Length: 338
Image (tube, rainbow, N blue to C red; front, side):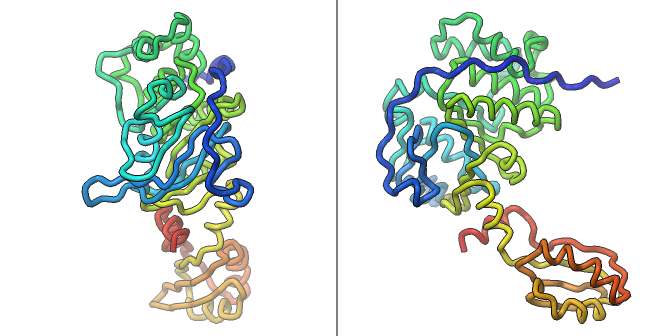
């Protein structure tokens, strides 16, 4: 018999005092959605090179209180940006300012930061309580109740003394979140924190991250899954190949993706009759027939999806398959930077 995942626990305590005011953004935030009026994090012309590889290229943007989604395909530079923000990676050019200074040079900046890395950074043989207490010691946290308080917030207090070696990926992620929060950071950096979480765990973590943002913390969450980011964040910053591809509220990002040209494969019998029926439709910009396969080019996939069943029925055509040919997230993102 399986048991339900325990819900996220008590409401998290409020954050540490506000961070110092940030630098003046290079552009008016009201005119450029890449910037916010009261930033906690400011990235200015940042580039990161690993030998010949360009991980970030002249990136400028800022982040402030609330939850911001950092969206992009694998290899887009999300993790590199997060490592630069937390001081784990130096920038080759440009600057990164976080909570009062350069995170690699100003030691006090680290007291404001909490990081949940994507990779497995937990030594073998540790329990969630061990990990939380270890992080508390690193940050000189004097509140002895803090580790258990945050383990309760993520719903792991009852499992606090179990070895994490046997935990699922989702449980390990929750333990890492609790450890990152034990110093009560004002700036929380979450690199793919929902990886491996089951649907209940995802819903609980999303609710927690939104609560933390509502408290005035700066919460930056990376993902390559658009619908996850939409559930988490009102504001989205999109990276592709180390460059800023788009920024704005989630509706603006969704609209930018919806307006792109797509190819849709339709297997039908007979395909040429369906092609003739589609030829005059305003959502169709091109048609190609190959055997029983009909490829439809469209920049209005939603309108095409609504029209296709009725057009096929009216033409006496049976539909066997309908699927996008270029619907990968990487294809969507590539179009944003053409």
